[in-house]
Length: 207
Image 1: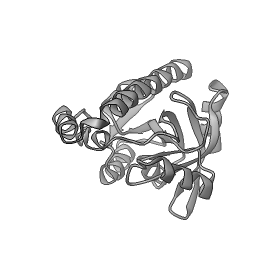
Image 2: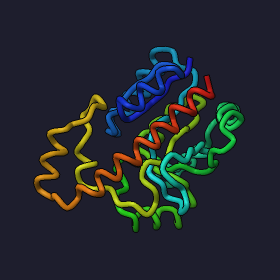
Image 3: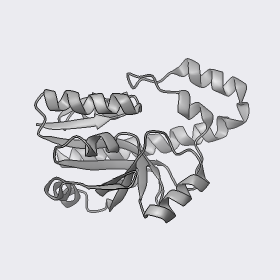
Protein backbone atom coordinates (compact mmCIF):
# COMPACT_ATOMS: atom_id res chain seq x y z
CA UNK A 1 0.00 0.00 0.00
CA UNK A 2 1.21 3.48 -0.86
CA UNK A 3 1.01 6.03 1.95
CA UNK A 4 0.90 9.69 0.89
CA UNK A 5 1.89 12.52 3.23
CA UNK A 6 0.65 16.02 2.40
CA UNK A 7 0.41 19.33 4.20
CA UNK A 8 -2.94 20.70 2.99
CA UNK A 9 -6.47 19.44 2.43
CA UNK A 10 -6.31 20.71 -1.14
CA UNK A 11 -3.32 18.45 -1.74
CA UNK A 12 -5.05 15.55 -0.02
CA UNK A 13 -8.03 15.74 -2.38
CA UNK A 14 -5.68 15.33 -5.34
CA UNK A 15 -3.59 12.60 -3.70
CA UNK A 16 -6.58 10.47 -2.67
CA UNK A 17 -6.42 8.55 -5.96
CA UNK A 18 -2.86 7.46 -5.24
CA UNK A 19 -3.26 5.71 -1.92
CA UNK A 20 -3.99 6.29 1.74
CA UNK A 21 -3.42 9.96 2.62
CA UNK A 22 -2.34 11.63 5.87
CA UNK A 23 -2.30 15.41 6.40
CA UNK A 24 0.40 17.16 8.43
CA UNK A 25 -1.03 20.68 8.47
CA UNK A 26 2.56 21.79 7.67
CA UNK A 27 3.54 20.96 11.25
CA UNK A 28 6.68 18.86 11.72
CA UNK A 29 5.40 16.88 14.69
CA UNK A 30 2.20 16.05 12.84
CA UNK A 31 4.21 15.02 9.77
CA UNK A 32 6.05 12.47 11.92
CA UNK A 33 2.74 11.26 13.33
CA UNK A 34 1.26 11.05 9.84
CA UNK A 35 4.10 8.79 8.70
CA UNK A 36 3.78 6.55 11.76
CA UNK A 37 0.02 6.32 11.25
CA UNK A 38 0.42 5.29 7.62
CA UNK A 39 2.96 2.63 8.54
CA UNK A 40 0.66 1.31 11.27
CA UNK A 41 -2.15 1.14 8.71
CA UNK A 42 -0.05 -1.09 6.46
CA UNK A 43 1.82 1.25 4.14
CA UNK A 44 4.76 -0.41 2.39
CA UNK A 45 5.87 2.66 0.41
CA UNK A 46 5.64 6.37 1.16
CA UNK A 47 5.44 9.47 -0.98
CA UNK A 48 5.80 13.11 0.03
CA UNK A 49 3.33 14.96 -2.18
CA UNK A 50 2.19 18.53 -2.67
CA UNK A 51 3.47 22.07 -3.03
CA UNK A 52 7.07 23.16 -2.56
CA UNK A 53 9.11 26.30 -2.42
CA UNK A 54 11.52 26.75 -5.29
CA UNK A 55 15.22 27.10 -4.51
CA UNK A 56 16.81 26.72 -7.95
CA UNK A 57 16.60 29.74 -10.27
CA UNK A 58 14.37 29.30 -13.28
CA UNK A 59 11.77 27.02 -11.73
CA UNK A 60 8.26 28.36 -12.32
CA UNK A 61 4.93 27.80 -10.55
CA UNK A 62 3.62 24.38 -11.55
CA UNK A 63 7.02 22.88 -12.41
CA UNK A 64 7.19 19.31 -11.09
CA UNK A 65 10.02 18.02 -8.89
CA UNK A 66 10.91 14.37 -8.28
CA UNK A 67 13.53 14.02 -5.56
CA UNK A 68 16.62 11.92 -6.02
CA UNK A 69 17.48 12.53 -2.37
CA UNK A 70 16.11 14.39 0.64
CA UNK A 71 18.48 16.60 2.62
CA UNK A 72 17.73 16.70 6.35
CA UNK A 73 20.34 18.75 8.17
CA UNK A 74 23.66 17.18 7.18
CA UNK A 75 22.07 13.86 6.23
CA UNK A 76 21.33 12.74 2.66
CA UNK A 77 18.47 10.24 2.44
CA UNK A 78 18.22 8.77 -1.09
CA UNK A 79 14.76 8.28 -2.56
CA UNK A 80 13.87 4.76 -3.65
CA UNK A 81 15.07 4.39 -7.26
CA UNK A 82 12.31 2.01 -8.34
CA UNK A 83 9.52 4.20 -6.97
CA UNK A 84 11.09 7.41 -8.29
CA UNK A 85 11.67 5.85 -11.70
CA UNK A 86 8.00 4.90 -11.91
CA UNK A 87 7.14 8.56 -11.42
CA UNK A 88 9.71 9.97 -13.83
CA UNK A 89 8.79 7.45 -16.56
CA UNK A 90 5.29 8.93 -16.64
CA UNK A 91 6.36 12.51 -15.90
CA UNK A 92 9.50 13.00 -18.01
CA UNK A 93 9.19 16.78 -17.83
CA UNK A 94 9.74 16.71 -14.05
CA UNK A 95 13.00 18.09 -12.69
CA UNK A 96 15.13 15.52 -10.86
CA UNK A 97 17.34 16.54 -7.95
CA UNK A 98 17.67 17.03 -4.23
CA UNK A 99 14.84 18.35 -2.06
CA UNK A 100 15.37 19.85 1.38
CA UNK A 101 13.03 18.83 4.20
CA UNK A 102 12.68 21.62 6.76
CA UNK A 103 10.66 22.05 9.92
CA UNK A 104 9.94 25.70 9.15
CA UNK A 105 9.03 27.49 5.96
CA UNK A 106 11.81 29.26 4.06
CA UNK A 107 10.18 32.62 3.57
CA UNK A 108 12.84 34.89 2.14
CA UNK A 109 14.28 34.94 -1.37
CA UNK A 110 17.79 35.55 -0.04
CA UNK A 111 17.51 32.53 2.26
CA UNK A 112 16.33 30.41 -0.66
CA UNK A 113 19.31 31.51 -2.73
CA UNK A 114 21.70 30.69 0.12
CA UNK A 115 20.18 27.23 0.56
CA UNK A 116 20.45 26.47 -3.13
CA UNK A 117 24.04 27.68 -3.35
CA UNK A 118 25.04 25.61 -0.30
CA UNK A 119 23.26 22.39 -1.27
CA UNK A 120 22.26 22.45 -4.94
CA UNK A 121 18.74 21.48 -3.88
CA UNK A 122 15.87 22.30 -6.21
CA UNK A 123 13.09 22.80 -3.70
CA UNK A 124 12.09 22.79 -0.05
CA UNK A 125 9.02 21.47 1.77
CA UNK A 126 7.89 20.55 5.29
CA UNK A 127 6.90 16.89 4.95
CA UNK A 128 9.73 15.19 3.07
CA UNK A 129 12.02 15.02 6.09
CA UNK A 130 9.46 12.92 7.97
CA UNK A 131 8.81 10.68 4.96
CA UNK A 132 12.54 10.15 4.42
CA UNK A 133 12.98 9.14 8.06
CA UNK A 134 10.09 6.66 8.00
CA UNK A 135 12.19 3.63 7.20
CA UNK A 136 10.20 2.59 4.12
CA UNK A 137 10.99 3.01 0.41
CA UNK A 138 9.93 6.55 -0.43
CA UNK A 139 9.61 9.08 -3.21
CA UNK A 140 8.91 12.80 -3.41
CA UNK A 141 6.61 14.42 -5.98
CA UNK A 142 6.17 18.15 -5.58
CA UNK A 143 5.07 21.15 -7.64
CA UNK A 144 6.65 24.57 -7.24
CA UNK A 145 4.28 27.11 -5.70
CA UNK A 146 6.59 29.98 -4.75
CA UNK A 147 9.67 30.29 -7.00
CA UNK A 148 13.12 31.09 -5.70
CA UNK A 149 12.83 34.84 -6.24
CA UNK A 150 9.58 35.17 -4.26
CA UNK A 151 9.20 35.94 -0.56
CA UNK A 152 6.32 34.49 1.41
CA UNK A 153 4.00 37.08 3.00
CA UNK A 154 3.34 36.77 6.75
CA UNK A 155 -0.30 35.78 6.15
CA UNK A 156 0.83 32.65 4.32
CA UNK A 157 2.51 31.40 7.49
CA UNK A 158 -0.60 31.64 9.68
CA UNK A 159 -3.21 30.57 7.15
CA UNK A 160 -3.30 26.84 7.85
CA UNK A 161 -4.96 24.88 10.64
CA UNK A 162 -3.53 21.62 11.98
CA UNK A 163 -6.09 19.64 9.96
CA UNK A 164 -4.80 21.20 6.74
CA UNK A 165 -7.77 23.51 6.18
CA UNK A 166 -7.48 27.25 5.56
CA UNK A 167 -7.58 29.53 8.60
CA UNK A 168 -9.33 32.49 6.97
CA UNK A 169 -9.61 34.42 10.22
CA UNK A 170 -5.88 34.30 10.86
CA UNK A 171 -5.19 35.43 7.29
CA UNK A 172 -7.57 38.39 7.60
CA UNK A 173 -6.05 39.41 10.93
CA UNK A 174 -2.57 39.32 9.40
CA UNK A 175 -3.80 41.45 6.49
CA UNK A 176 -5.30 43.99 8.90
CA UNK A 177 -1.95 44.26 10.63
CA UNK A 178 0.07 44.47 7.40
CA UNK A 179 -2.15 45.50 4.45
CA UNK A 180 0.85 45.96 2.15
CA UNK A 181 1.27 42.18 1.89
CA UNK A 182 -2.02 41.79 -0.01
CA UNK A 183 -0.56 41.89 -3.57
CA UNK A 184 2.01 39.23 -2.73
CA UNK A 185 -0.63 37.08 -1.01
CA UNK A 186 -2.83 37.28 -4.11
CA UNK A 187 0.15 36.35 -6.26
CA UNK A 188 0.96 33.39 -4.04
CA UNK A 189 -2.63 32.16 -4.26
CA UNK A 190 -2.44 32.32 -8.05
CA UNK A 191 0.88 30.47 -8.10
CA UNK A 192 -0.39 27.83 -5.69
CA UNK A 193 -3.42 27.19 -7.90
CA UNK A 194 -1.08 26.65 -10.85
CA UNK A 195 0.92 24.17 -8.79
CA UNK A 196 -2.20 22.30 -7.69
CA UNK A 197 -3.39 22.05 -11.28
CA UNK A 198 0.00 20.60 -12.24
CA UNK A 199 -0.34 18.01 -9.49
CA UNK A 200 -3.85 17.12 -10.65
CA UNK A 201 -2.58 16.54 -14.18
CA UNK A 202 0.34 14.50 -12.88
CA UNK A 203 -1.89 12.22 -10.81
CA UNK A 204 -4.26 11.73 -13.74
CA UNK A 205 -1.32 10.52 -15.83
CA UNK A 206 0.04 8.30 -13.07
CA UNK A 207 -3.30 6.60 -12.60
